[in-house]
Length: 166
Length: 437
Image (cartoon, rainbow over all chains, first blue to last red; front, side):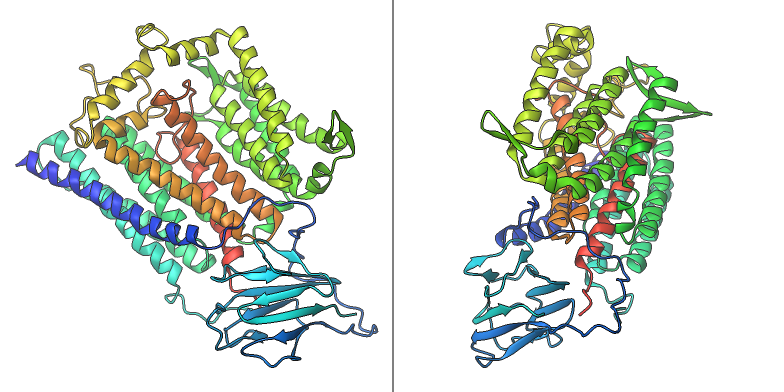
């Protein structure tokens, strides 16, 4: 009796253990199929310290600088010539209804696809783990990438040119 | 922006809760099996222990749900299963030791909750980097001066009736220091200022504090005669420098220095020599320096594929001691392999693999350099530690005494590892949170 019970418990623990491993491992398998990112950070590729919660208040007398923008040159879902104004510190690109660059209807765009970050005069773009990737000048980006004037950003069918503000 | 999601409507937290429930089932079945094998009859005591385990983890989960709603859902459940396996096998060795380990698990979860609440904004920790570095060195110095020597290694300090192993905490503090320091200096460390034999070398004054700190740690550890920690500290520092700079030069130079150091250690110290002897041919020195490792190999082989079963393995000798000396700490993996077999032992390694993967995943998704370096450093710490100690007990590597994270018996080790889990969750919260739009 005791031996049978022990056998059942022993097999039970092993089965539960592998069930547990499997439930986590299947997300790992999905993860590996997706975009490969690198955690090695090389200089000049962003990752500077983020500003602490409250940033320095802007000089109220100063003229606010014109925001930068992303000018649409080609898209299945937005008219060519449309502009996405980079007015916020973080501008979301995706199918999400709250996204500043709302690309609803493009099946190759994730809901939260990429974010354009504006910090002072520096603008960068980071992919949010999208399925089909974010491209800067034709290269799929793996990590946060600094945008220079005239850089072409491609998300799904939409191609946009970055124009800095100032 | 404060999210308007309800406290119950959090997919990743619900997933975490489901996995913790599975971990509780494993714990209950394991405790019941050991108790049954010991007493040959059913009793309610393992159920009480499992309930306590479940309660502690559900409290920790509830705190995470409130404080870090978007944090990684896998880290906490993985620690639960690993802790459960450790508790089951320690209970099998001795109920008294298991009771102590249970108390340390509760303390560990308490520290986890404290870390989660204190560092929910992980950037607060970056400001403390120099304090962490200083405290780490201080702890190691304290161990050398006040330390008690156990088996030739000076690792412990006694406070009242408690034995504390400060090295376990110094390890984490050092990773925090390195993450903060490297985030600040990586530009200058990666940029060569002059070339020697065609290889770019960074300015010495930038690298000096780093080299100094590594040097101090190593000297301290050699003075403590603790090979395992010495190796661990060195590999962590090397890995983090590589992650910060992306330059293989540092890795190459580091490994070269390591080879030299290892050769020197073999020549100079009998301690290292006996470890190497026991590794190369334990049966030639079976009654002396190879005794532990030989017993470990017998124990693992005895387990076979499916194991001897909980409570049925040949773990204790007739006097009531363990057949392998220090089975509950350094050699807990051999005990697991004996009772749960190859299948169970592989599952344990898979669990660590998943834990390390979550750590590196958190590092890749973090969006600032400090978080990236910290997560990668902590994941490396766990991965290297498991590799070195499991490699040691299965005779892949020379044996160095390290604990198996979350599984080995020991208060300092258990609580320190729960602090690592807490830090990983804090970093992942920042990376996964709903970004303000």
